[in-house]
Image (tube, rainbow, N blue to C red; front, side):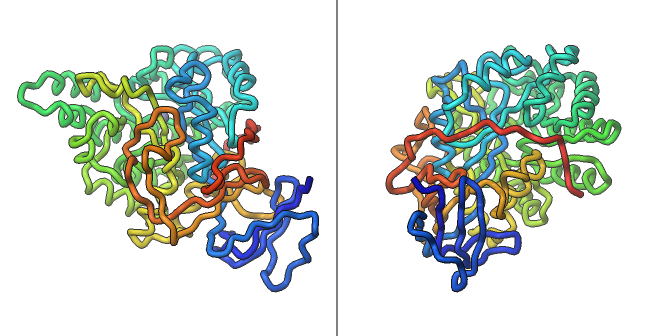
Length: 462
Ligand SMILES: [Zn+2]
């Protein structure tokens, strides 16, 4: 069996932009990039992929998914979740510590999850650890966990999961100190619980008010802003590396950008659903479009794109948060599970929309590759097409489209706000460490090559 693989005739996304090049992979790593007219002879033992007409970009890193495994595999599971990821061009995912059961808040559960997931994933993966009101005091336990995780995830508001309790503003201070001590990133769900509670109380039973509008009104941009401001203050005070997940408003991205410029070790993620859907989609369609923070008015969507164009957003995460369809069918919108199923369409949606808006691929690709790899300490393996790094690649075509029809869904429960969307590009092949794991004609490879990543310490550039 050969271990050498060549990809020829494609346009490769390198550190200097797109270049026509022949790409050689050996033993799972990128071995070299060669001028098309001037490269060493390809050995008879080597396999070749003709990528004529394709863009070759780094395999995407989705740093925010909930695959619910172990414990809630009827909601998703590593196998189906990672399959959907691979079909969408993702080669690395970071799985959140909640919505699997039990939540990952001690070292025994973390070890169990690591062991249990072995051999179950089509893509490489890392695990987040949970910092909650329940484990915050257990320093020794947390120290042990810190060794094996990407970073800590914490909520500043109700998480919706009983054994994953949110941090009060005082708890958060302690969490900041701990994360700094462990040199780990603290990823935050930033909504101000007190305000959300108060507004939910106010709007929930307001007579004559459309309940979908009431839900939107209970989680305003101001609740996100309050949480962001408080966390930024603490991050500045303790020097903690903070990563805000799913920020939904340009105003808050701008605040984060200001803090970053002033030297705070902070980065920000947004999700494709805040970039392609708006509040009207939620009002019209309800449950399947319910998430927290909720979808925002179109002016916020425009504002977020402006932030991307300015280079103020660091990473894109799907926040793939599935559940049984029955949990989306409760009579009241307040009772349905909040979460967007989209891991398969993260990059298709993002790149399609960016291209429509005239924002270059050079600008947006790093959000799903180099920037994420740098931020989460895996840039020695992932995130760029460079000799020595893992040969994680996606072959894309811009002259073919993708229809997100139900039959194509690879995640377990066949519903998604992206259903029936058409994207003006197509994933032709996904390659993980030199092996084709997905092909748009023949489908998934059948083998689960995914490995758990060991990670470095928190680091940030600039
Ligand atoms: Zn999430």
